[in-house]
Amino acid sequence: MKEFKFWAVPYSMTHLLLITAPAGAIFLFLFWRLDVFRYFEYFFLGALAWNILFFLFFLKRVRISFSESGTIHLYVNGKEKIVAEPQQFEYVRGVDVNSTMNQSTLYLVFNGKDFTFSLFESRGLRTSKQQDILRYMVTNYNLQKEFHKKSLMGSIYTYRNPSFKGISVTNYNKNEK
Image (cartoon, rainbow, N blue to C red; front, top):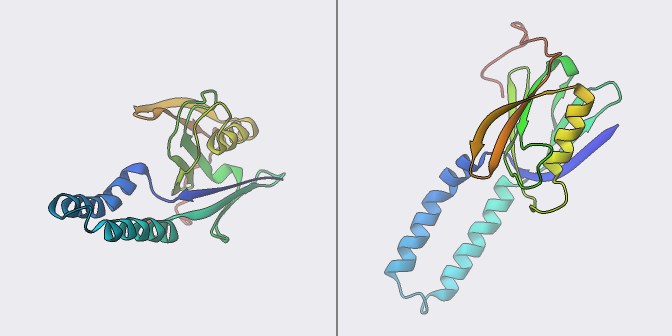
């Protein structure tokens, strides 16, 4: 049994930008309209409070475990979100498993249910958690790599599961996520 644990935000980078843009606009407006040196403590405390609230509400502890039979268990903050057999796993989207300079949002899609994780990790010479997860999944599930798109952070690839059986009409509910 293999297990991966990491901290992530369950939103893409675009969603995070849209969430934080109003607070950033208010902060910049106040920064230019008020005397910064006179109200420095308030700016500092406001930025500190914003960061603390952001991490309290958005940062989640994610655990992905793989059993010997290939069953995938996904936990977010200790709560089990999905248990999927290999036939229910459709694709995973993320960075190139061979490159060390890419950074991207990790997308996992199971039978119509998709999970998005923006991982907080440093870029450098060592492999990232996302690459470790993708390498493990590519080797164990024989995923087929295909180019998805180019982004500012590097190329994004989709790794499709050839043994995916499709979405069952009886088990699929679009409102449930």
